[in-house]
Image 1: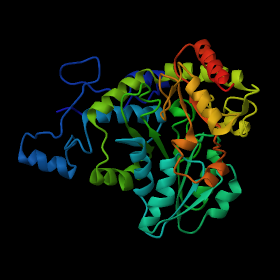
Image 2: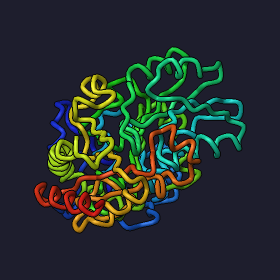
Image 3: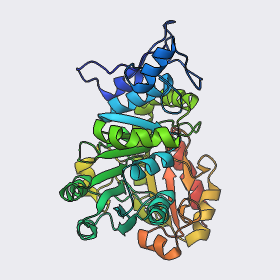
Length: 401
């Protein structure tokens, strides 16, 4: 029987080291790479042992829907990286978001969320939770007075992403956390754009952090996954049983792939961010670019907050080209290296037209309110040579005519 992943020694290792070694457990064979336990269930030495395992009197694994040695290694490595008290994984990023929001709510509760959210996240807040008698309010995430004015005696969850998808707004996490806690509510932060290396929401006061591990954590377009991190009480009282009974499980194989992704996360994100900063400067002020937003630049609308809560500027760039939708399509179609895709955080540079893909379900009015114009493109910078990417941007700009 594989033992549960051991926590690291009290001496805290630096992130790059934890990303390689954190949470590792080995079988009796002493393998170097993490073992892949492709099993649905586990056997017991006796009926008494099975009973003890199910009652919690004896530690160990029961069923891979809610516990598996490979998944446990991935979870423990993420916990160490984030500095969280406890963690659970999920099959996808949206499964993680849905579980984090729903697991502690009941009919009559109230959710406040920033308007600037990934389209599927807005669906959870706007469409799904009201079906269960849970009310919701959307606010401008950058306006703290709107957060304060939205609070009610039944508000239990505040939810935001920062930087936002796709316009890269940055929300003051510490200030929103203070508003939440004053009302006895929890703050959930989707930290996928910043990655666990460039922003630490728990240290800023957030109660729960969620990731789509599909993005930077895998980083090579191979598999889906999600992670929810919080303290022991939230996980024990709300999250664990919700995941156990509803079953949005991360597969052992995907957990193994994500473990391999974590080993290179630090070097990938550092390189991608450095390239993104250079390309943002390269595009800024170009006559065919109407607007550019990058969290690492001094002209970012929330540059003071970026400086306060982020250690670097992300590998994402948002920019609006002249010519509206036709112009955006011409530029995207003019690329040879940069690929058109709705994913991000990949080793390959990817460009997305949000208004017709990730945010197409929103009304034109809602998109306009968020700054998602027909000419807006979101660029996820990969690991290619930055000079080749600059040449490709030139090809795209030339295609505008």
